[in-house]
Length: 265
Image 1 (cartoon, rainbow, N blue to C red):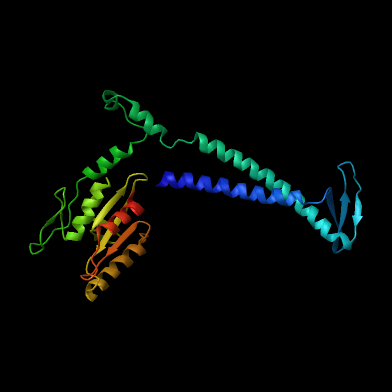
Image 2: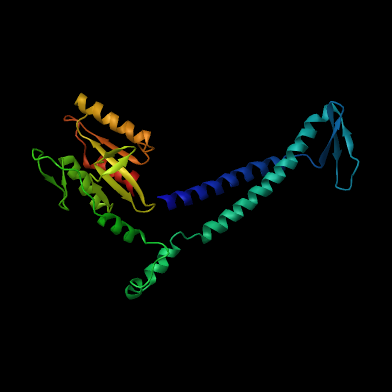
């Protein structure tokens, strides 16, 4: 996602400079010939029109020709802007053509398996990083005896059928995740429903499924939890994923998959 965002930003910048170049060139086509020199005179200014570079003195422009003078001031500025925009467009095109964020990854992948065991890669490949992250041991939150048993396809025990759907959808999409892995948030230790690794930029996201939104006490408790996230810089829609449901409006797989596509891949 981060690499895609970088390329999208570069494309946006190129198009921005192209639009600026186009608009300034259109104004330049309608600009008057010649240039203007500006001199301070008392509390005001005077304009002198120059028809050619060798015209050092220029012709004084009276107030009646102020519009022409201002058009020539704009003309000089537009020329500078058009030239600067053109330079940026050329630079961005060259960079985008040669930019390869996966160059180090490709070098490592081209190494034989025997040699891979003998070297320390300059950058750990995404898949290897994800494997190491996924295999890091942790102590999950204890599930009480009276909680019904629900298991994902990978054998993870979760607390509800909806969380089974989330766990299975994450696994199917190849998104590494941990269930109720402890996390220090300020001075508190919490257990997010899911801690998710977005492989491309190696960012950890937190997924809270609020499954009893028709229970007032439950809502109050979880709003406090969300506020705790926000107070520590973990914001909904950025690095905090929230899904919700009630008895009458249960979550569905379509919503879960959309969340994964939007935030996790």
